[in-house]
Image 1 (spheres, rainbow, N blue to C red):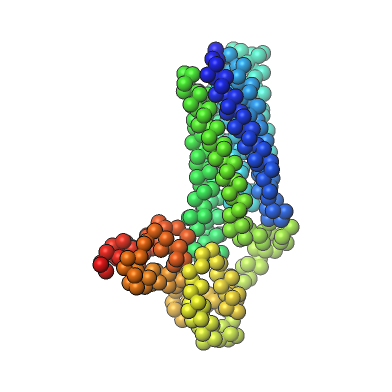
Image 2: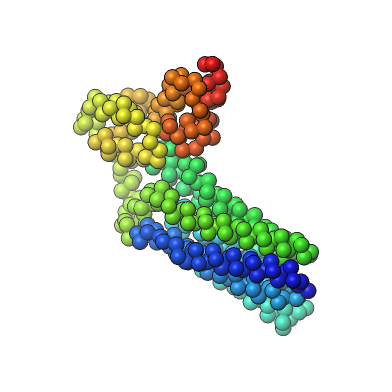
Length: 373
């Protein structure tokens, strides 16, 4: 039987999640085609948050622990699907809404079976409950496998586009998904194990804080998400022709022999030297296409130049420039603080910079700095 503490915890949780609903509903998302999926995901999250908020108010009067466990399992199944869909939308790969609809149908079917068996066929309810619990665990596993595949594809796509390490940018989406997975596992434990009052209340407080975090993460994404959406712009609905035509065009470009006569390698090298002098290589999140356009060549000509003249790739060449510049800065000022050195030389992540610097020089930036003192 619920106590006054349970009432207060449940009310506070539902109120906080309701506030997050308002925040998401009022969130301004750019009215551009490539943001359409994100806008759709926002409203799915609003619906998801609303379901949890309402179920929180409903649980205030739930005196049957078995009923409370069943509600927790059902709500968790919907939440797992919707959070997984949201994380996928935040990646560059497009996803089919048909799979989401079928999953929603299956979850709804299990939910109906649980409550019908509870009311009309109590002798079968236990078996149906364990079947639903097993399906939920399978759902978490499937979501994890699919997400890992999608984020791997996205990493390749972004790295091919930017010729940069993109772990720094993908990290927030990974945190969103795997923290949601953790909450999903806690929900499974809350539904399957006989939690005591303090245990269940702790779980309610944890998922409340998490939902507020999700609302903030989605808000922040709307300010930084342009980075992810640029590579997908050409395949977004309404922004391109059909996928088969796009694939065929890409293949023909890759097979095309680069035209290196206009401009000549000598002219490109002159432009590139000026680009280096301006320290353009220290700018982050600038794609190879953008650099090539700035130097008035095609990406194919640009790639051919580095392959033939330098026997390397633009990505490796640019990273070497950044690391050499980092050494130059330290040499010129041995007392230079290292906390923001990675930003000065063009790395958007400190750990990636330290790893690359150690691989390039054999020692860490701090060890290199100490050797000069």
